[in-house]
Every structure is written in structure tokens, then in C-alpha cells.
Length: 288
Ligand code: SF4
Image (tube, rainbow, N blue to C red; front, top):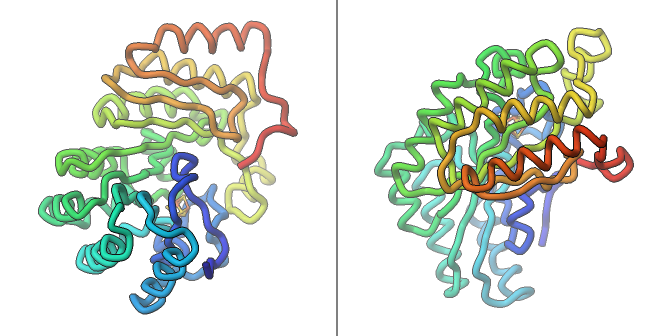
């Protein structure tokens, strides 16, 4: 497979064939994100995509799961995405699930009919990095949309039958906005009630504007215990139904999982216990 750097995918797509249909991210401005900073956004030609699909067929045989990369592949016109899915189904008759990274604002660019067409073609899940529910944080981090717009986009996808896997980034409010970030992120998630919710911890990368802000003292990353206090406020204010919650990403200091609200009390107890005894993942075992 001819991949072009950097290829990232959600942990739950580890067994999927990763198909790059775009390169980079069309937004590429989030202050904390260094993934595609030097990669100009590009749309791959259908010819190249078909070639990659056939190579995967030769290598793996029939496949059931495909993930469309890179950073926000949903920005592609719906017609093009449908053509790609049609070809995937032709080559992989057992195909059951197609996932994709999407910005919440990309969803708003699609009509409900387009989203339903994607869903009935086999696109079952959007991975959306919401990062924060605080408008101040979203603005400082140049996320490119507001709390209200993110909620609108997410609800629109879910109303079309597409499952959402959402991500909140611990520490992204810095020390100054930690409380606001935790509280307003919980409020945002309560309105969306996604199928999946993952919490990751911010890692400040050297090739990002946030690194410069940190060096200048404008942004201060909370300490590990403060990050867990932030997660406690977030969890205490969540009110979800049937949401699969995970903090098992390698960036986190503590791994928790369960179904919210069913397991909320147990998860909070585990978190409080970790705070009490200071049992956190050591730095050398953490990664992006
Ligand atoms: S939208 Fe996602 S991939 Fe694009 S710059 Fe922001 S965090 Fe990075």
C-alpha cells in the first residue's frame, strides 16, 4: 500500500483497512495539532484510490471494515464518497462498515439527505474530535467552530442514523480555563449523547502554535493530578444514556471504561481512588 505520512486512525479501527482518500486536513489550523502541519491538503484521484483498493484486495483478500483517512475526509463531496464506497463494495463483497474522521463543521456542509445516503451506502460511524465544549477554548485553539455549531453538526449526523465517536481533550483549557472546559464539555456531550466518548490528554508538540504559547507562558498545561481533577468535574457533570466511555488512550494518566450512566458511579470511584493514592501512568509509558 502506498501510504503518505502521517497516517493516523482511531484505536478502534486497528483492524480496518486504512484508505487514504485525502491527504492532510483541510482546516489544519488547530493550535494544538501538529499532525499535518507541513502537509498541504490534497484530494486523491479516483484512479489512485482504486489502485490502492485493488492492492489491498490482492494483499488481504475480502475485507469487512474500511476507514477513510486522512484528517477530515468527510469534507469530500458526497458524490465522490459514494463512488468510493460503491467501489469498495464491488471489490470487497463482505464489507460491513466504513468509518471516517470528520470535523463537526464538515457535517454541517452536508444535507440530511446526503448524510442518509452515506449511511445507507454503508458509512456507519464518524469520528469527531470535539476537544472542548467551551467557546473560549475552541476559539483560543482555533478549532474553527463554536459549541452550538458542533452540537448542531453532531445531532444532524445522529438524526441521519450515523453513530458518533467523539473525543474530548483533557488539558486543552490550560490551567486558566480548566473548570470551564470540563463543565461546558460535559454540557455539550449531554446534548449530543453520542454512542462513544473518548477522553484523551493533550500533549504539546513542538511544531505547533500551542508550543510557542507555552514557551511564552501564555498557556500552562495542568499537572497530571490537576488533569484528573478536571476529568472528575467532567464526569460528575455528564448525564448520558448508553454511551460507551473510554480513557484507555496511551496519552492518558489513567485508564477508565464503562457505559454511561450505568457505570458512572463506579468510574468516579476508581478516579477518586487514583487521585487519593496517586496511582497514575508514568510519563515514559505515555504517548500520543
Ligand atoms: S481538524 Fe483535526 S486534523 Fe485538522 S488541524 Fe484540527 S485537530 Fe488537526
